[in-house]
Image (cartoon, rainbow, N blue to C red):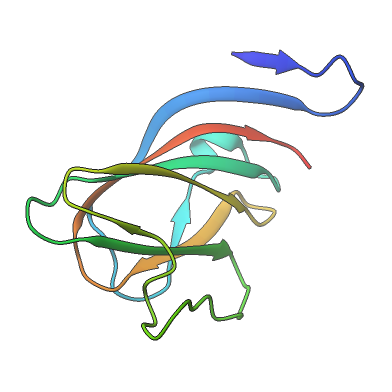
Length: 120
């Protein structure tokens, strides 16, 4: 469902489409969401759901090809943390192919949804 910005800017396209369901990768890994957003650069709003019954989901996301390290505190994977059964939103800019990188400190069972996106 596209929402037009009457202020003369971008269009926000709203989805709730699952793009990943499984064990979160322990290292930086590409996630291709081009089936939802197309082969283009977008600012994507995503929802992460921690379906793991025991472990916290610690998550990082960055534009594909970015080499910056996204560390907070003393852990290398505590930038974004969700307890078991919790969900949260995060935003990331994809590359020209609709791909971003993400990872987790542990392989918690995770589902990722594209909630919406806009072309910057």
